[in-house]
Image (tube, rainbow over the protein chains, first blue to last red):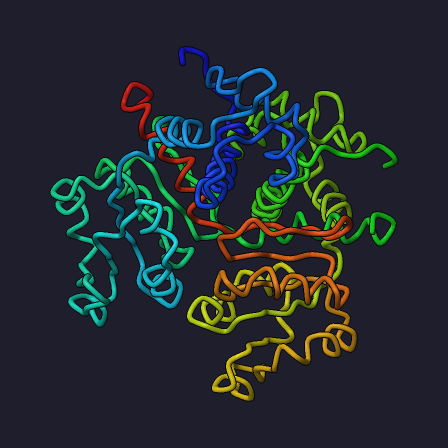
Length: 211
Length: 211
């Protein structure tokens, strides 16, 4: 894998993973690019092109071996291990994040939660005790945290991100509607429902002609 | 705008909008593609290419008129009006969504909330009274709801989406980790933090060589 893979392809790989997991659960052993395309609403050509970045998974005229492709994609995405995460901000959103069950099943575990509100620090949520953000540096190092989830108020977000970067965190899942500034070598994904809504309205505006 | 605009470009436009709004708030009147690129971490060529789909906004050697470009992009995205939305599922996540302040400021307003739990139906959250999902059809028609937010348990999600589609909803913001099946003419965006995490780990796995 010397060649860089386009970011747009990386962004699609979890969708492949999810579909292949479903097929494996149903004991389906082989899938064609056409079937995979039907599940993902991509053309077969798109599927073949995307997967070609990672080597030759398919066999001519036979399709893809589901288990093999699943294992390979997990390896490529670094999902053949578990990832300890920190949550920063334990307001209403933060608490919804703590109770979200989708993370743990995919190998992501929130192992530490932080807030700056003295009324929250020391309180327990499930197995976690809310820590002071002042302890971030120490906890990140001790628990080998590589990923942080940011769910603080917008006015605090950039400062929290700076602190995370300084503490050695390399990957940030950001729930706050800001355009964060980041140094090279640190990756951030926005979980911003408004951005998604603003691209839906584009299609709504075009109207019923597509229906 | 007879030519279809690539979906990846549509997906980037809200980022432009957000950056331009910030510049306008600072009373900055003109911005170059280089400056815009710095804010968005895109190359100037990428900026010019993206915006070229929508006509000629920039003036040679002068840059973009911030207010003009902002107004044009809002029009293109259908954001020069407000959009009434329905929320389906008022569990912990649903409640966090109801209290999210980012929607209203961008013209998105949750005007109705639904659940199937008899213990929740009839309860009030802020200005809303939780309605029975059985009333979905009627309320969607009465309130002209075009967008629905789905925050129900995974086992109920596809059925809820089917009901929404049948009721005439054309755009769905989906918080549930499923691959939804949709008819043509209905648009869906996933708000799935796990997908984002699974693309972050790709970069983490590549290691510190990029840092």
